[in-house]
Length: 387
Image (cartoon, rainbow, N blue to C red; front, top):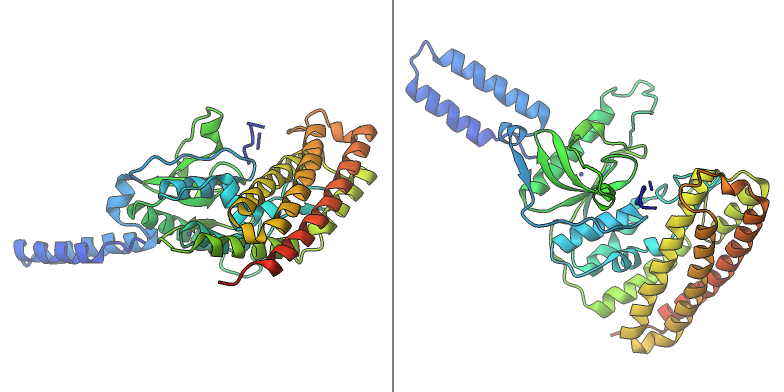
């Protein structure tokens, strides 16, 4: 998410090079000097293994050679992924990435409409659609964070996962490919475009709002849901019609997704959860306004994405057009909610009973329209021609 705008996965320590260095030292040095040289080489090698990076990389700044632009948006995974893909030569925008990944069709709401809703789900669900855009994906997602009680586990588990992320990022950067990372400045996604010693060079929402983007130490990522990196190592060739067909099924899967966490509700139940939080006054001001912006943006993306699919897939156009019409209504209603609770809700407008009542009405309208859209998408999937 673009906080202020509106706000808020190695290189091996080069063993071959070390071996060559040792041979050279052996040839040049006297017998008395050999033990010291070997001891020094061993120390360097051990230190390199511990760090997971070569000495060269630890001292140098390495950046991808192309311009990488963070694509402004509330859904920062979408914005960051779009920036990476465009830098790698994929013709796409946030609408394409949100649509093919099916992020555009997700809604996930916490009991109190907590700020975590838009990111508290299985990010692996987003990856299959990226192949439809032309790149493979390689992801690492850790299982620890700073706040985890250890309960007898390895006390360095979290740091090891942060190290694994850094090693993968550094390898991708050396291969001239940017990648998505979680938490460079806050719990949002950004783009790793280089490494400087053991720090990341990042493109993020900060660039959009004119804020500095200082290098981020590898162990200082803000990762409440675990260390994460997403890379795009190879090209993928897929016919557009096939990618579009898969996107429809992917959208339906996301509309029916369940997190398995009772604190959160998804799909149609998410609207009910949000309505209940507003009705009882449980909705958090900050989280409520953030959710409003994110889900309104997602529905705008859904509407535009389906419009594109309908235009280029005439044999499934009729049900797709019905879905487009329904999502226009969803997007309008969610836009109303976002307008009622601008981000950040520093004035705590969510405490106003009249605003809450208007938002509840809009959420009910969005829920009903999205149910119609889901029916139309199911029909489009059934009608889609088999080549």
